[in-house]
Image (tube, rainbow, N blue to C red):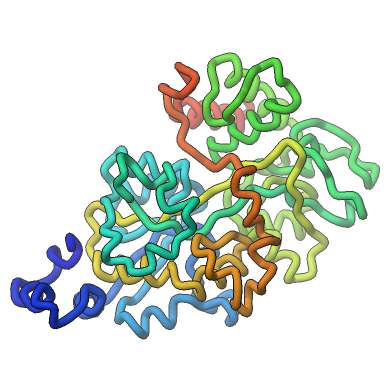
Length: 385
């Protein structure tokens, strides 16, 4: 009851514990008094029908709760961590390469699952996931999850989709007879080092990489060398989903790691794009709605977390972004997602995805290169060093 205690009066708490009202009813009353909730989120995660009237899971929440939703869009996990360190926000939809950093830095607080009635409906594969659970304590509610796909131009590749990430890592002539140089992109985030490591797991098995987030010095150097080779091919590093879509539409980009969100929006607009899971495997993300340690509006925040787990919201978000719901019940009966949407978006691929995770110095194989090195060295790679 931490959030209620923070905002409620002694009288209201006495009423609550007398059994005259439920915790949810008290949350709603106190949330209406707060009147707002601010969320740091990935692009496309919090929609109110402005992009497409069919996709709106904010308006109904605001009307029912009395909490006005404001959103600060973040383009990378590092930006999310920086914003949460800055403070002033209630919630963040953090990926696995940010969530443990936020927990370790005391920027988010444990959640009281008793205040989230829909907690029991969450996919069992996610309820205790290591990117939001530490020492059996939960630091957030699972939102949605998905893969970093290879998006490609169907006019360039024709009827044969690319089967390997080599189209973005190695110089080659593409099926349209032109080089890939200057026509491919890579993600502008240090966690992308893991994508290079994943590629090397198949193409340089002698390196002995078993986990793309746990790299010794030799494995890490090989990944950086591959990324430096890629630097000579990349026209632009992307982190803004909308800029990447414009690059595919207007700037001649034909292949890149991407999110299903960009693929879906571009295809809906008639662009000649599609996506695939290359043979080397894929990285991905499972995002958690986490409560700031100093949330100014915790009751509205708890109501949003509960709202975010409703099958309708879960299905709508997944249909819009191309993700998989954290609530399996959303996989049937959602008009936007359809009964095959979860299968299409990869529900059965959970065990195949190498989910984003913050690299640490101490790892299962002994000494590994920590994340701060990934940050500084990837900046160097992008800068041509």
